[in-house]
Length: 308
Length: 287
Image (cartoon, rainbow over all chains, first blue to last red; front, top):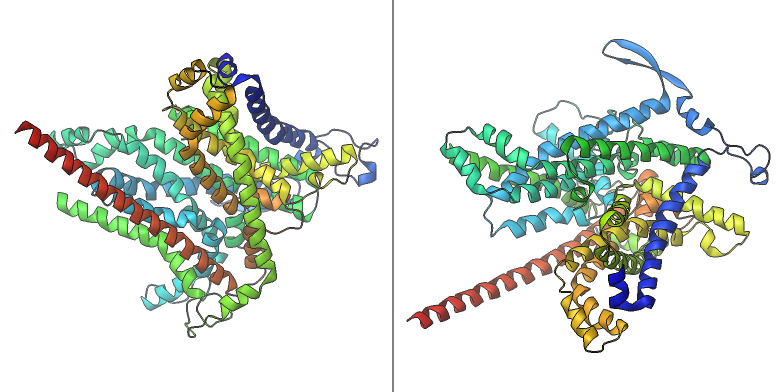
């Protein structure tokens, strides 16, 4: 701080400090505190806000447990509140998406870092970037076309003779959502892993080969451990983006799939109950914080490593 | 065996690219199909009617203009705030730095839904408390701008901070010793060094803003941006006008990518020539 004052004088330093304060206080901290405070208030008509009935309670959070439905899993039948189920399924399928992204991205990341001819690498990266520049809503829409009942995918599979009847892709629970999310976010897994593997000395791989290690052991013992920071940051990014996505689940979801962000959207934009929406949004934030902390603890990485 | 595995890797790369690019091809193709529903099968003949339909779609054009305004505003604000934060964080150390940096980075990880709702609640509540009808406190795209800046500024900050690492602080010392004013040091020495990062930051901010859906959806009031408009169209039965729009956007992307690639190749060639010349000169010296 002393340093800043000496270099740029009190005026400029003050302006910079004010801008940082505006960002962190007005755009981040105070909004989130307001959200937290609001989530404990009841939903009242405007005239009653601040009146005797406007007291703090956990009622908004308890709405998560309203309305149970019956589900059966592995032969067990049990009742579970709808929103708890949605919350759980959102987490579960976000994890599925994360794992699938990793399985898809890891071989290509290794290929880009160690196998491909370095001179054609920039072109390959450019090609990979093109879908990233096309807006997310359009990418989800593209899959909406592809997965349609009379769409290209069913047409292709029918003509190849792989299926007898067209498949209702968008009416199979979370299938459409998972496909869409994997397509949309796989590149957020690819580039961190690629960066991590790139810094691995190729001599290590060759030494292992010379000493007779099979290819899977080279990956298991050398490449995978080395790419751990990349995997961690990729996983955190993909999980957060998937769990927080509203577009893809809304466009590619079926009648039997519900994402937690959709529930929040319904409270906020359809029911106009901002307070319950706040409570639900806070739960989502809590979950995301927990997941990031857990991932950082498991992989032993710092926050600054993730946001590279 | 080694050869076989290498070919398998090449094959995988090709399949991956097909997986990434095929949806875009399908979407573009559907823009030219003479069918009421957006699809490429069955092919009902070539038409450009969806493009004329798109130009006549007033709401889409308005949404397009809105998107550009929001993106420009976000880029300007995020660049100013992000650059100031990078300079500030670069000059503090210890615990303060860890806390500030962690706070800034965490904004990238906050779900857009949370950012949108919290921004909306704060500003409308302030409007109620102050009892004004001033536009700033009503829902609208200006709140979307504020919400988007709250995390896009962090991306700009990271880019500028990386660039600051290669800055020689001695230059500023020298300028101060030679009698430059504080403003001159900032304008003539520090900022010119940061311009490449600031430019990249502005571009990132602009495109992130165009992409944004979550924050905008919760703060926009009644106004549309392109993403929100496309979303509402997809949900409420669509004509291939959206495909026409997608086709044009993909074309713009491709042209930009092509220009970038040609530029890169030219620079690589010049670099190679220069290296070859240096080698020749070295050899000549040795002889």
